[in-house]
Length: 303
Image 1 (cartoon, rainbow, N blue to C red):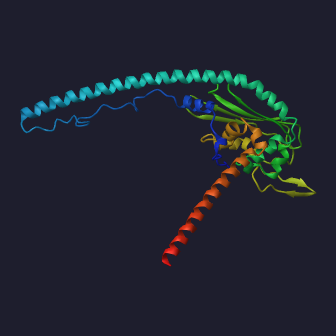
Image 2: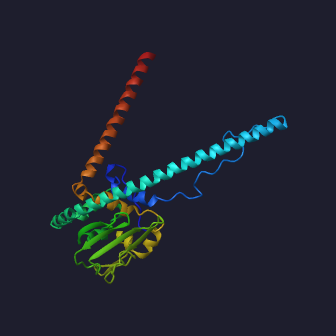
Image 3: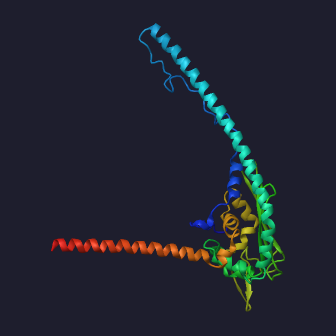
């Protein structure tokens, strides 16, 4: 299985509004009998009549207890009605926000296409961006880097209604590794809250199947791949393993790399991270200095 890298801790891995909306829609469900507040039982919530000493007192206590329970049941039912009303308002709000997101997805689409055209003129753009990403770079082997040199463009396409899913598309120039010009991974969200994952079955050329560890001919000898290839992410067995969990590789590409790959191509993310480390070191240095000063003061007092 492809190693799942940790999500970047800094702000570069922020979730987009659209993803939050998808999660809201998937989490929506009608209130069922199981999660409704149950009717209180006798003696609960302060409705116990307390058990009088005589039969008359006990009778009055029992009547008070029944009256109290009826009032509680009525209040809880009214509260449930309010919650149901709020749920309906939230559903309408989610639908309206999704409509806005869908509209702006259509507006962004031609801008992304223009960006892709410019990127094609920059040698090794996507290879550099992947290698500069703190999490994705851990998944790219030396052999993978050779294939990434043929990556012409990368695209992320949301479903038309936004909430149903998305596809990540790798477009390749003709290369000596596989026949495909497109490698696609698709995530489809169901109303039941599950995710269906499908991917391209790569048509590797003879002796070039990195995903299954085929040996690579080099200078007359065969050298097996010691590391797992990034391209095993597309394999059929990988789909089965990921169907029950979150695909962090897809999340990072969609929510972090794709929105602004130039940040990683320019190594701006590393510069930000280095700046944070420098600040931490300076803070640590100040603490050490304060400790030394305190020790000197203690020595003076002893003398």
